Image 1: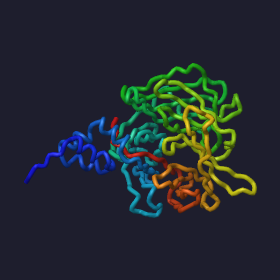
Image 2: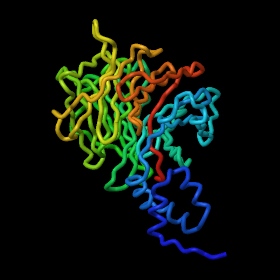
Image 3: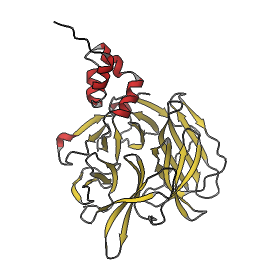
Image 4: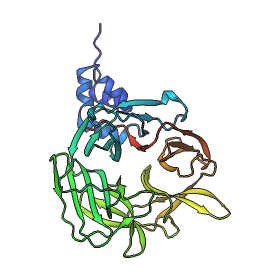
Length: 364
């Protein structure tokens, strides 16, 4: 049999266009392919130049399994749902609860039985993180606001779990970051206490950060100034900043979400107005450093949805938008903002969550 030699450069050009699942399988074909696909630099190039499709992750009644779905396919196409095992959690509690606390570069941040886990659903790699003894657990009766999230510092090539706890008024704030590279919690001194509170009961007192442009973002209410802002923490400079929201953005006591669609940070808010059909407005920050560049890019109709509390989760490659609500309903809107289809997961009760992630080869 003739042994055909394929230059590494040509091999990489071919492999970089393939989806992650195929690449994981191809690692067993040839030693050279395994070395190439396992190279962290190849993973970075694949993330930058490869397929950019997002996948939805859905919690299920069995906490040892999550379901993933391709948002381009029909919500009723059972073949598009894939069950993913979370057996690495190793639960001993009879009724454990798993919550998604953030996502960044394909890694999901999970919390279960008072432990944190980093998990790459595409490769199965995972890491358990014990909570810092300096971070108090927040209960519904506490007056604290608890901000958390998963981010990445490209300067040090380090994944960071960020936790901020502070009272809504005059109590001191506290912030810690877990460095995956250092495998340790690091206390971050604050120049001043953070005086914010949750925007509404929809998000409760536990806010999950949205990672974008090397920073984590939370939508909060700055009660000293009587205004809503996006609180941003830059993981590279370790600094806080505020992003003003558009003046037309009225969302107090209304369901809302902070997402990343394409290459922009977006705000999504439900609008309920007399003599006007209920809808969701999507505002896009066209230029990250220009807070006046907020532009309303889409309006989604929700009058015909089984549950009127659905909010967008991801913007699919075909232009459709998929959203969810806490009651176990998935909704897909077409490019005109009209409801294309919806599906109710009646068997899902407490703990139902949906998040978007992009499949990658990244490791920790």
